[in-house]
Length: 330
Image (tube, rainbow, N blue to C red):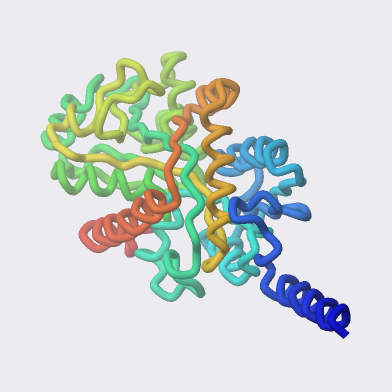
């Protein structure tokens, strides 16, 4: 009789563990994952976020002992892929690899089918990268202060291009133009390559893009790099002044970031395990080489630090969108 009771109790515990999805996992998340993990990228293949996601996924595979499969789900300003993860089961098997667009979108699209904070559990940031302002090669100025003086002396003559929508390239330049009081005209482009090529061809006077996108052309003399958007000089852009310094706008900073989120209520041991593995990957010298090639800086954060970054940026970019009227111009 006693053996029957023990068997019944063991069976009940097994069922409970299966239903909870977490009871069978050790406190440090060591039993996770037990099958392939899906890493959703809410952007098209081939872009900077996608390339970084594929690098991180391969490194995570080696750490987790299970395949980490990148799934591109672009569309609706990243809302399709992001929404899919928000609705996924909170078991760590479906993750989101996203960018600062996650914090920008709420300011542009108040009716998103998810809450960018409440519907996700931050795992950790992995990278940051500066934007750059570059001018066409034959522009009548060579520095940011010279450009500002020329713009004010020639109202509405200068043009600048950027990919429109939920990007720091667009919002950062809009904020700079407003704070510096520059009478320049914005020309929207569907993508960063198109805006950079337009500046190279002399169709526009300046371009606001990710630093890496313009750097190649600046090194060959086809563009003039005027400034970068980080608050302090970046090792990724040696010798290039910051907007804050060159334009005398203390505190000015616009930074792109990338990181991983999980659905809300993902068990803490799983989140902690993933975060630990990210730190190991980012500390690896091999990662340093890859990040340098991509013109990104490694950026490790705890889940709580990443949550703070996201919430702060949502408020910050929401304010920029309102103050610059960016939502009407995009």
